[in-house]
Length: 385
Ligand SMILES: Cc1ncc(COP(=O)(O)O)c(C=O)c1O
Image (tube, protein in one colour):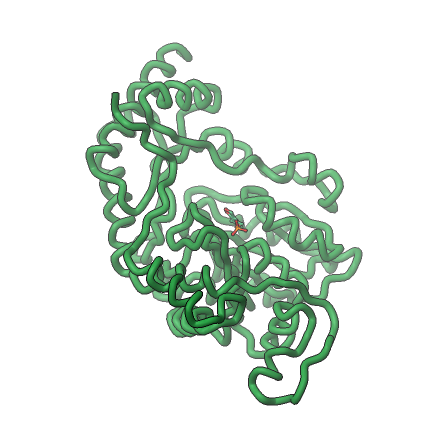
């Protein structure tokens, strides 16, 4: 029997264990150690950022972002409905209400038209997600945010090292966040980063990460002791995990090339079937460097997805659905300031199917995935007619 093709398979790039051993042996495995510094320097220079702080997750980086923009009760933050719960919860935890906006075809990013018509004086920030590492209309969103004098924040959990029109994703907003969760392109189990593009946020961001203290100033010799300054938490990533992550990031060109290859192979295998099966294939902006974070298809109808998943699993292939819309989820009743329709989110969310994706996925396995998909869609489309 063929082995199950898992949805995701975390891949080592080579030096992870060596670096982790060194992190233990050099006696600094807690946050802000030497590997953390190397990773932060690498990311800062690649992203042309003012500062990068490694965090325990993208969720934590989003929480820090929400703390940095000083939200007050009654404030509203615009968030796409088609995203992970953390994108919304981070801002709701700071007392704001979330206003969900729709996404648009074909990039599945936040719809600037809907954002524009949802703006009022309560809105204190706009948060955009670059779904699958494909840029949302970040320039237009930035110009709306600037016109209203509110920050744009990029939840860039999927898009590290992708660019849009030659500019790195994550560098358009006042700040952006990254994820190094085991399902992402670059991993360390659980991890994230807050990317600061505004010098003015650096001081407070370090206090937030250092449990509310000015420990950074102490470590840099600017004060003889460190003291409690205010809000903060234990947001810093262990240096053990930063060591693992450094090995991954040093292999970024190879990892990105492998993912590009997997993406292109799926496209070549699926293009001949897309039209007669009425399958939507993933969109990428021409000329952009993509992150190739995931490969999804849009099925012809929502009604067949559960059967397609079950039948593909019978062929030892494990696809999965993705975000359940936030605007109609139970959490929205309490945490959203008003419930507005998001029809594109509803439609995409009900038809989207993510195919197995990992750096080392082999072409022969991709052929198995595609033939299981084609067979299942054909069988169910016939039943549906
Ligand atoms: C868009 C988006 N933001 C944030 C997160 C949360 O990331 P983490 O698991 O690193 O907290 C996810 C998780 O996949 C995500 O898809």
